[in-house]
Image 1 (cartoon, rainbow, N blue to C red):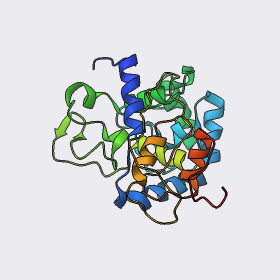
Image 2: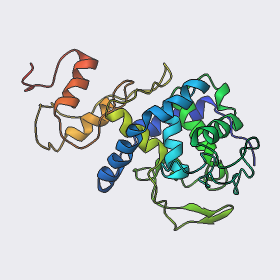
Image 3: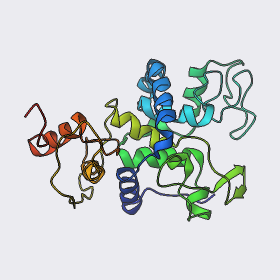
Length: 263
């Protein structure tokens, strides 16, 4: 398969897609359940990541995509740890005797892709490595579909996927939450902070004056979309301009939303 390189244009695309990513509301609870499970096992991801110099959350979302957070499966592809991998990449880990521990397999999977040599874990590199982990078939051969490995459950994906190695369907839909969607929710909940390049494009808000509220406000989603364009801000676009939205305004502009009881 042809190699895809992380160019400036591709980096800008990743940043734009991430900043404009919105989860479909029917999946809110399902995504939070996955994030809760990830956080329960955070120490295991950190133990592997700290050794290899890889962010724990990168390992966590791959684990969800490849093995459904099952610690009895290989991080390479979700095969059982009772044997060496039987699917691509086949025969991993090459050293040792099965059954393997999850940690042994995870280290092998990450080093196989030389991710332990990656020093830049900014947002574009993070999404680039995630997409590459699944393969470049979408980007190279089905350009009308953004990879569901990243964007499933969001406004960036409707249908189209590989139903098996090399077998494409325009009507099939991914039933997994995309890796970028999970990262977005981790950031929204304040568990991580992802940084873009210093020259990341920002947009100006096109919205009326906003007020703090404990209820849904029709125009508040526009404000939240705008605030999400800035590094260090991750809000769920739900139209509720409450404490977190007001805190983001304070962080960026030095004042809370009008009507915030904190002033």
